[in-house]
Length: 318
Image (cartoon, rainbow, N blue to C red; front, side, top):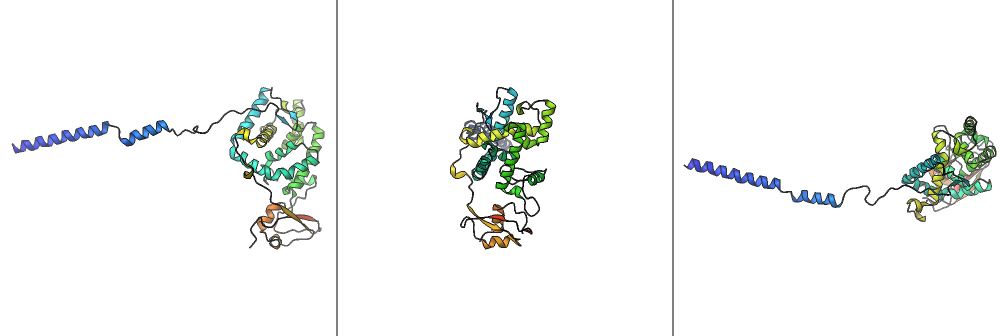
């Protein structure tokens, strides 16, 4: 009998325990319920507080005063592509705005002096992002000038000195190049395309297709996008608010004031030269990127103008 009672007790315990387990599994836990409510009320959605929209193209869109035929649907699509790509590549657009504030004041008066439309400063942006970069083909500097072209337009280009990195002199060379080919091609739009593809390349397209209108030419991918990209960059940098960029004056980069020192003899060490002016070798090269080696040969005793930053803008050289 005692044995039977023990059996019944065990069976009862199992039944009660099973009921409790079922109850626990059947009811949603406080944690699960909270997660479900949280997910419903606060979805992790990229659209939460951020919107992406199509972009309205300015009806008076032009390059150097030459109107863009936006009534042509193929042209409109190409324009739209560049506005979308350059607007929504936000980090790049912001960097271009910051650099433009620093370098446009140097470029603009040189363009004006040579009667080049102001829009061509955006060509330099499209070419290099306003950086002293070198292309796979060897085009160098803000204006992406090839070695032979630089020499043709009066720039010194060798291992010791490369004036394609000299913003003022390179801009002057680019202006002379542009004026030369504007006389040949007649429009600033074709001249800009020729800057990218080369005059011979553009002439070849014109001869084959029997047209002298940039917007009627079937061009390669890069040159076909080139002028439209310049126009998109121009509009975005000129009107940042219209394209969703909240930038203040204090956000931009600014040029460091400098004074010039004339050098007309060899320099054995630019590091020692920099030290004489209480700056580092790095700072000297930053302001004179056209100096390509740690020394200056200058056997011909040519006169060079070296830019030295005003005192107080950098730490003194140790």
